[in-house]
Length: 129
Image 1 (cartoon, rainbow, N blue to C red):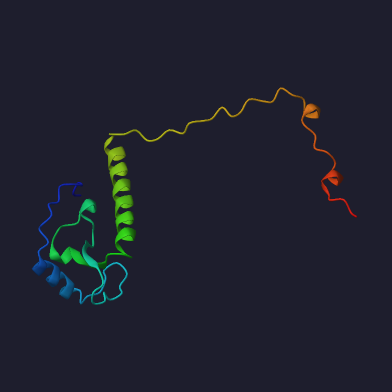
Image 2 (cartoon, one colour):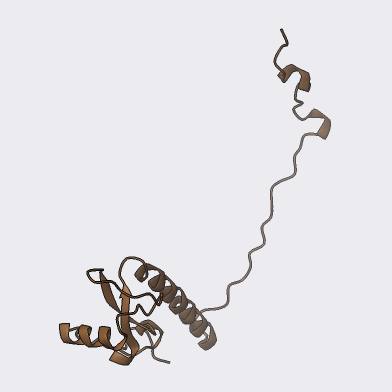
């Protein structure tokens, strides 16, 4: 498994962007819908670099900038964070979380019969005229 930050990014030249777009026939790799002419798009790593993906054309594809980027980025970051936590726990860097038992609230000192009493329900009704 490749660690985060070890995969070096290549420059994204206009020629490389065009090649990646044409390889996928203009279809978004995230949602599968075609990217329309003039619609903003970006090059997305199919397997995120932070999850061990490589920065090669075979691992890249076009994706909608507005609708698909935020969803995929959030999912990638969530999965990468979990992978880091699992790896750290596995090699003994962090101890597993221990459950903390609460002491709870102190018991009331007032007897039950001395607690505040609400007035009878009939006082809350509007008067009939």
